[in-house]
Length: 516
Image (tube, rainbow, N blue to C red; front, side, top):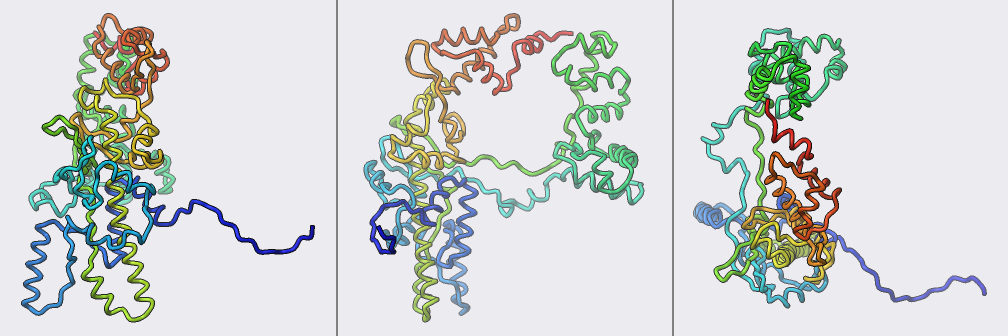
């Protein structure tokens, strides 16, 4: 057979991930802050997009526009769409781009009675598949512009500001002050020095003895205990300031690990004190400040803002609502599009305008579909774990991604992305969606399996209720759990106990029977 070139036509099927489809998949796993940052970037790049204002801002905007009209000042066209009807106005071509998620997505929601004409920001879904009203509260703002002048003026100074003020008044060599200034920058939030003296000496090309001398000067600054390199040194500095750092106290502070184990007999022997003196020394240590840097103001920890709310309506049905405050509302400025479209004359301008319009339509549709997917997965989670919401953590069922995916006819990877970095506010607290997926522990009577979280809860309750004179060993915990139809191995009990930071039976016996 001769080898000759030839042309052939073949028809094959293959899955092609378009850039828009890839980005839509990424949107699913974005957290609230990541999604907001992404939308703001898209709004900056696309002149046809705008972020929906609140009703007050829109009213102020209209007032400013009327004032500018009377002054004959040209103004920027305002989007004609409101925050509640942008979806119907902006999605002018539903067939222009493919669905960014599952291909049977529209049919999935039609079967649940969900209409595509409802804006995603105002959707809520009950367990029977009906749509209700949206949530108007829950989202918070951490913008400093929202703070009043009194709040900004009353902010506490940080630890670094407090030390800088002392450094300016410190009578020391200027070169020593430079090294102290560097040490201030190496302090953590608790006030501990995070870099060793040998590295500091190497950085400044000076003897380590000089750094130790300068560190001794810095440790004389307030609050007492700052610039310590560990807990023991921090407490020693405070006791030295109190003139209570005698040899026995110094030995006790050098053996804080033994004190943590409550091995008082060993401490009495190495400190050479009796029980009464040891008790007084421990009381002195308990009155000290282990983290002096936390006395000063710092960065405010941002609280978790839930993506989904779960509530029970008067009929006793669990309702799942999206937190509309966390969903960025994007507007398509059709007025501005019509204006600049009439002025586009060359081919490049028309192509650019068409791309902006297509990207704007895709973004609105992708955000809507993302919200609907979160709502659908959350609703199924609530349905599967209804006993948890009714009765508590003991009734949390074993659950995996496959169960949810099969119930809502989606792929497991889609469910995994939806439940990442998403939080649900319930009657029992705020939980990450991943929390409801737990492994199963088999039952002794071949009944329903028990959730790993429920088993941990049982172990914690048994240990909390144990008699100080009869501390429960891991083997005893296994016996008690089997009485409750939980078939579990001793090593699994030990693993769960350590995961909850519960000490062993020997250490618990020392803690509960600690007497001097």
